Image 1 (cartoon, rainbow, N blue to C red):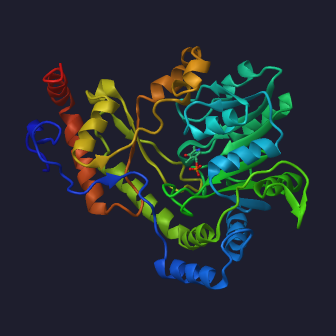
Image 2 (cartoon, rainbow, N blue to C red; image 1 turned 180 degrees about the vertical axis):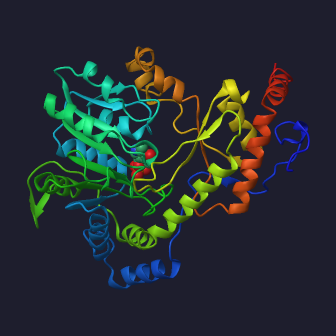
Image 3 (cartoon, helix red, strand yellow; image 1 turned 120 degrees about the horizontal axis):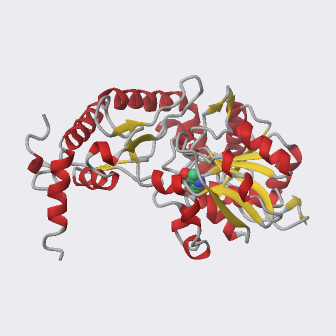
Length: 406
Ligand SMILES: *Cc1c(COP(=O)(O)O)cnc(C)c1O
């Protein structure tokens, strides 16, 4: 037993179980020798960016892994979204979920396109197709779905709505590299999809992202925009930006992609272990992945039900942080509660009841190659202890918070 009495909890009177902090999204690092070899080659050849060898190899490897015709690697997913918005020619309003990382909304707002927040389906945590049509106006130009935690959106339903209303459809697939929907890899849906290879994502290229599409014309337009609009040596045929991925990032991405099956296997093993260790713990549920599909198991997500648990998600977070388990509230708050959206759309919260409820319940725990199996057992034992003694701990916590601070 890790804790004998509730006062042994680090937040109350005890010592943290972990001496070193356990992080969510600790970077996975593939074969170091291979990466170093490639970096040395880059330096030897003095080709650091601009459609270099590794950038091209990385694009081909992603396209082949995803089974998509075109892949354009970009500096990061936020720039990739911005380029996508321009390449799709979007204007006016775009319907998106509020339960996402703020970059989804920012990419639109940054370009003067208004994000219109749609509520989510509380079973899937993804944009709820049944609520989209009520938000469509003459200004609506697209739907932007987010495959939250790598669990794909209801792509069929979204496709039908987009088609019926003549809207573009694209996806923020930042969480979903390596995942499938009805047996087809994410990256093949809508007009295009955007991946993130940020350091904290399970497949990283230090910083990086990609646009995947089966539409050649769209791919050509996006590629041009990634490189200032250049079409030839001294020829520019439209506005563009600089979204080029550098060679060291591409080499990192390529190297990590070579060990992706091992990364997924580690994540899956961790997922199974968390599921097993937390089975029957009152008030928490490990969010399940559909085993009939391909998953990257990148996020280990708990849903906390305060009524049963006796502790709120935020109390559990505070208790875990004191033990050096740096669980993260993904996503909290919803984008509609962040600026500038809170000021621009003060009415949004009232029409996003499921988003409001879910943002108070979700908690991501450490997984990936940065955590050992024995540590997962300890984390789960801690959570079990906290929830079994939820009421008592909650009372003690409220006494502390009413203490010296007042
Ligand atoms: C990480 C993330 C992004 C941003 O990706 P970057 O590569 O860091 O720009 C966008 N959307 C979602 C859902 C993300 O999780």
